[in-house]
Image 1: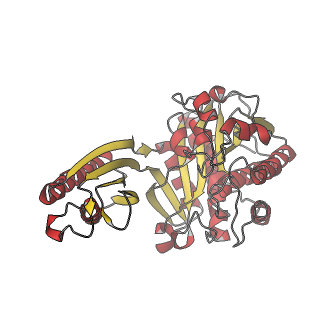
Image 2 (image 1 turned 120 degrees about the horizontal axis):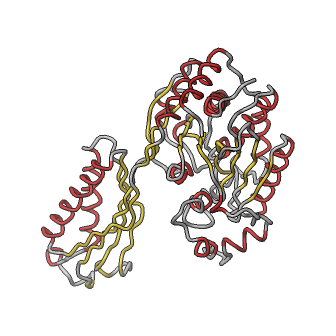
Image 3 (image 1 turned 30 degrees about the horizontal axis):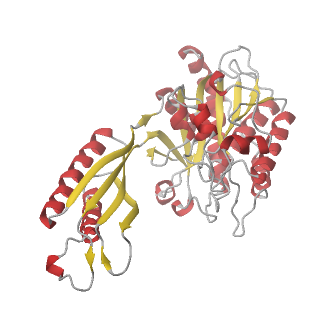
Length: 425
């Protein structure tokens, strides 16, 4: 592990001797990635464990071997490229994922892996020696677009994961996660439960509009927002649409509509609260029958667990009041809950130091989306660096980040990696 004094010395060293990545080499590498699974509208279609993913993995493996890295694959298909350090400590892990959504962009996750590769290339080019080993990682199935849930590769590292259950997760065609790994030749010999790391740093696009709107170069990510999913079941009375007068109806859909509007208004009154109803099921869902039952799910997010839980309680009270007024039934259950993840202060400090040295504008923020860093924060010191997403667009072939912002992000990743690994020339 890295001592406080050693890290401080390393930070001072890189203030005086600022290295820079090779911009053109990085952008050419990203362009090569964009050609593998190229989408019709300029993005990428590279779902996890498909032929396109296999091709990209093979390309990454070749690049890592060219840098004399020790390439390993674990039994969840996660890829590692290890650069030796003076000491045989658990490694500093840098990376993200290379899989995309069905109509994904060229940057989501990808700049984290290829940016990590450029960090290694730069260290090699400058003859930098680190005390701590450094590993590139490409996590499997981060997106969850083919095998749900997302973050499967990094979740396998956590103590509460069930390997055999995850192996049996199926895609829409019935192919299991295990069989898909085997089909592309990426069930590795390494046991996922044996992977040890001291630090994880993930470079990622913001996937939101804040950095772009405020013209900031780097997002210093303090953590990942807590999230709850509340399942609401509204029970009215199913009846014929023709003879039933309006005043005699107990319409579950009308009541649900009022509830959705109510939680949306509530969210506007709590700073930083985000509430979404993205799934709604109506029964019997036919034109000439008054809906008798509706279920919908409320996605609730906030950086403060206290504010999130207080908002949930207000929602429960508001929905119950609407149901009572309309003389219908409502039940509310928590389907899933994850508390806010706080990233490690030491990593945040090093990101801040790097951006000050490079005179980059910054914003401290929490991430709304989940990332592999969320799982890694349960295992080791973790942190994230965000770069702007133009207009906040992501999970879309129109996703775009300016080259200069990508370069700034990778240079920041370089500085932080050097500082935490006690790098010396």
